[in-house]
Image (cartoon, rainbow, N blue to C red; front, top):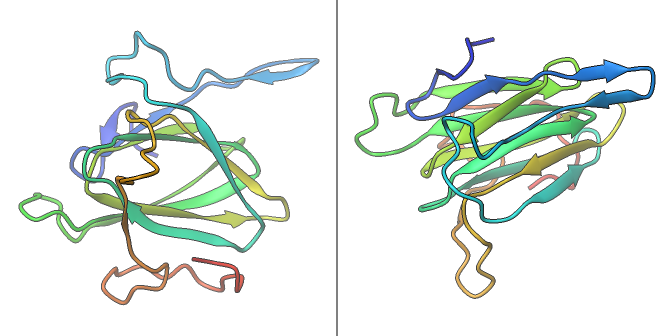
Length: 161
């Protein structure tokens, strides 16, 4: 695991999060307005995948994503296909969830996706910097099994994509 705010793909940041536990359960702060990496608020949403399902690949031209797995476990993968990036072609894999609570800050241009691992669905919260534009989505999509991305998700549920 990288150090707090460590970078493994240029511009991609991984911040360890703390679970504050007591007899009732736990609380985890994901993103605060006073965090040094906070840019702006667009919206908040949660996406869920059943075990074995892959949701990949997509990137954004303008939007920065702030991802945290809040239930279950997920293997998140990132691919830097940006022209001119010093880490072009690099792939990063992070397994996240209650046993590894992290915030992953994904700048524009980095393709990313996740696969739900374990026996429970994976719930991933995203706090993007932009509102979703239904008429003109800021999304660049590639199939989860795109041969141009050097990453193998392993066995995937047929619902993947």
